[in-house]
Image (cartoon, rainbow, N blue to C red; front, side, top):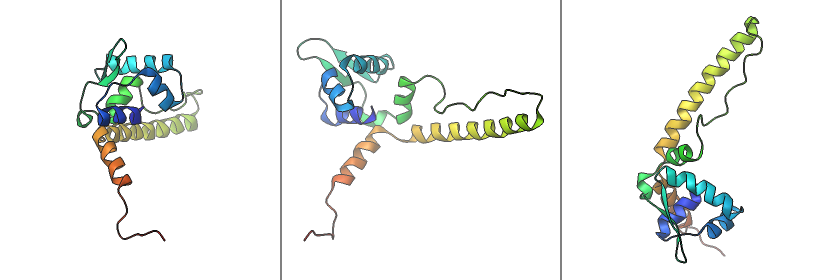
Length: 139
């Protein structure tokens, strides 16, 4: 979905659910559900009718990967570690505690990383990747 939003921001045009569905290899109703979540979070807006479609409500520089993730998924970014089945088992309790601490650290680090990446960064990276390589010639 990130690449769809970046395409929308770069083109600054309305995009239909059918067009997005083709980009994602899914159905227009699935796109409408997903885009509806993004609309509820103020990321996109929609217009009905012949010339309707979806449009970004914010500039790419004002949206982070975390913003999009939070709009599409409630709760933690990572799958939580398994429950502790045998709380009387000291080794299992220790294993759970150590894994849970690592999980919390990873969740926090991923959240910070997603918050640091703006959709404009993705657009800029795409431009850089498409620039011809200097000093390399094809023969």
